[in-house]
Image 1 (cartoon, helix red, strand yellow):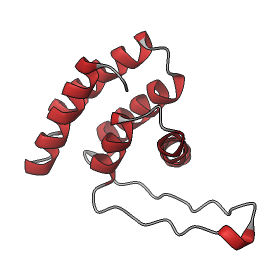
Image 2 (cartoon, rainbow, N blue to C red; image 1 turned 135 degrees about the vertical axis):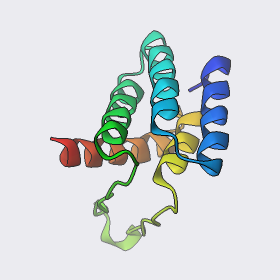
Image 3 (spheres, rainbow, N blue to C red; image 1 turned 120 degrees about the vertical axis):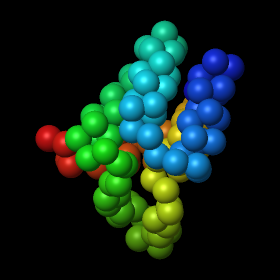
Length: 118
């Protein structure tokens, strides 16, 4: 998200998550971040943030199973490395959500969250 206010919120979330997971505080900040994404007209980020917030509300934590998508070219199959903290990793992706590689991973999270929640 190429917006100074959004980047400030994301950095604040990253600091908070590294110390302690407070679901209510995180949800409030995600709501503020989602509002900015709506203003920026980025439907992928808007939906992903909504799903993240729902997942946290449902489980009081953020743990998600990401499925490896097979590459079309078998010679260039990439390994998915499971991050230690999914929420922290997703927020780092959101810092530069315009990057095409980050967007692909954000889509993986969106898809995984949709499968788990619905």
